Length: 208
Image 1 (tube, rainbow, N blue to C red):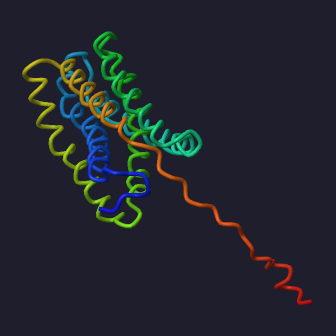
Image 2 (image 1 turned 180 degrees about the vertical axis):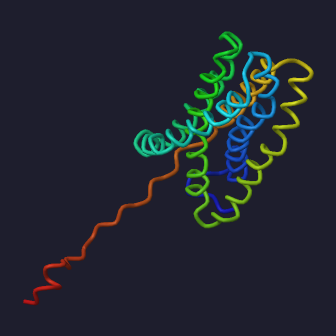
Image 3 (image 1 turned 60 degrees about the vertical axis):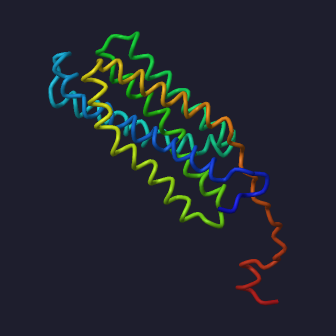
């Protein structure tokens, strides 16, 4: 793979970004498969399960446009770091809050995921302009692995420990990927070209 200027480890960076995508899918599905047991524990029903599944994705839908704008202004890598930090802290928060506040935990997990998921895709495109399709394929394969691994791993962890144990594992995964992401750097901004074309619509409609 051909790195952009100033980047010496393109495969490493692509692997890190793929792991960021993995956090997104793992965070969504590892919890989702265990929600029926949780709902029974707190006295909820199918509506509770549906709401807890939807709130994670709802946070992403609402926040992604705003955080994409923020990333353009403040930096894509910084936004990615902030998202991973929020996701990890929200996961750990489940250990200290009332279990019935899981909806708030899922909301903040989704807000964090919305930051690093949208930025990770943009960074793949920026880092690999000449091999964008291949690189996005690798990225999405790693992200897709989260959809496969999360239900099995999530069910196993909850069976062996508890739902709180699952949130600990989610936080550890998020913090590990956050530590790895400190190796990433902001992509170089494209050179802005001056427009030297004096053509105007008025000149076109009103010949001199």
